[in-house]
Length: 265
Image (cartoon, rainbow, N blue to C red; front, side, top):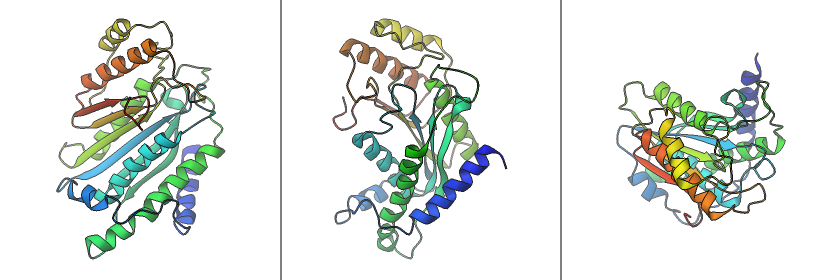
C-alpha cells in the first residue's frame, strides 16, 4: 500500500470513529438548512474541493476561526445537497499535496426533516477529521524542493477534480475553496512585498490557467501572515487583484477573493 492509500485508510477510520462522537456544532432551530436545501440544483450534485495552504507563512496557524467556519459552510452545503468533498493541505508544489478528507456525502432518510436532522453529525465528522489531521500533520516537501508555494497548481488540481467528476459537464456544481495567503512564488512570483497592483495583474494575464467553467471559486486569507496579521494594504490589494484576474480567466461563474471571510475584506 502506498503512502496516499495509507493516508486515505487512516482518514476513513477517523471518520468512522468521529461519526459516533457528540457533534462539535449544535445548530439552532433549522440553522438555515432548509434554505440551503431549497437552493440545491435539481439533478446535479454539489461537489466541493478545498485546498489549505500550509506553507511556511501559515503552518503555525493552519485555520483561523473564520476560515474554519467558511470551510464548514462549504462542506455543509455539499452534505445537504449531496456530492463529493475533497480537502487537502499543500506545501510547495502539487506533488506535496496531502489528502485530509475525500468522500461522497449524502443524507439518507424518508423526508427532508429526517435527512436534515442528520446533517450536523456528518458535517462535524468531516470537520473533526480535517482539524485533527492538521494538528498531527508534519508537512514537508516530498519532491525535493525547499520552497515555491504553487497556489496556481491547486487550481489546476481542482480543474482535474471537476473533469473526473463531471466529464460531460452536466451533472456537477463545483465549489472551489482556497485558504491561502496568496503568495504564489512557484509560478507567479507574488512574494515581493513591493508588488504593485498593475504588476500583479499583468503577471496574472500572462500565465496559463486551467478551465473551471461553471465553478464557484473562493480565496480566503489572502494577505494574512502566520500570526493572523494583515500585510501592507497596497500589497494585499495587489494579491487580491491578481487572483481575481486569474479566477476570471478560468471561466469560473463566481470569483470571491478576500482576506477575512468574516467581513469580506
